[in-house]
Length: 459
Image (tube, rainbow, N blue to C red; front, side, top):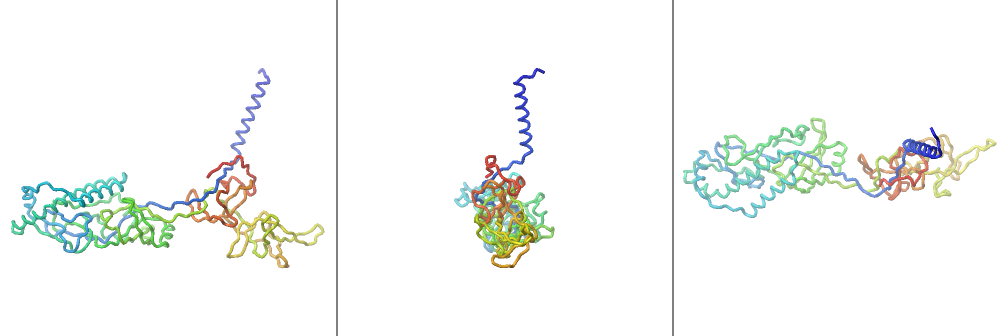
């Protein structure tokens, strides 16, 4: 090889770059995070089963059924709900009649519009079966509107046939009429299980107008009370918190309607925990739904928002309040420690120490364990009473780097999730907004100096 000055300089630069790269990957990189005020949304969407006081009404006679009460309509006791054409001649005779052109009223058009809008807002592609529910619901609505317009003609035909063509049936009680069953009409909150909510085999059976029914077949359903509830699966700890609040604000994703539900925690036969939310209104809005997606709206915890990765636990000595002297030379606290002079005589020294927390209940200070040692003897000011350092306890906190080194600051967590925590602001020994903390607490040690130029803002 022919060595020259150019090759030597290139080789030196190459070696330098390689060493820098190796050192970069071997060095822990300290990233800083600017503390900001914020909150963590605790709202969660749940899918629950709706429970109502439902009575299934069954046909008393066989024949062709025609409905006159709209689905979702409230009927009074003894109101006409449906008729049964026992012979089948009614449909034939009505086909021969001309009823002219029928137009829908504003109310009827509004009913159609609301039904379509509710379906669009609540549609979930993973629950495509709801499309068929919507189809049957619209079909029934059309038939019932048409039947209502033909009711007078039915009366005329019934009278002309000697009263033996049709039978009239009336509501046994006041309630909301629906035309479907699913077998969950008698389901109780304590009977809800994971299998009930896992509705892969769930089936709705619709009652269609102008269809043939046998005696004893279900012809319609009556929801007799405005009180109803939703049962949702929930974690035991979160459910207990919600139950303590009493009433929870709930948003129904189907139509964005909001209402307050009384919370009750249940532990059912399958060993899982469920939350029952009981309402005293809005039942009619969801009378055609068995499963509903709801969002629980609870108050957000406000405070200082920090990453969970910044949180660390540190151990301290506990010193009684009377053995700590406030207001040292640097504005901190001090203790009087017994010391041994060179000649072996005992004396005392004023030692400044960092205090990280004061417990109002036990009246004890949390003092840095690197300043004192277990077994140190402390004196009370202007007294010969002594205290031996030994008791320890831990605090959770973060490393503040405002002063260029890792300074532990105690925190009180109000709420946390997997990524962030909300901590109490304006604590005496805690954090303040716009403080800089270490993003990853494992990357530093106590009192480690931090190169602020290399720090990055993680906020």
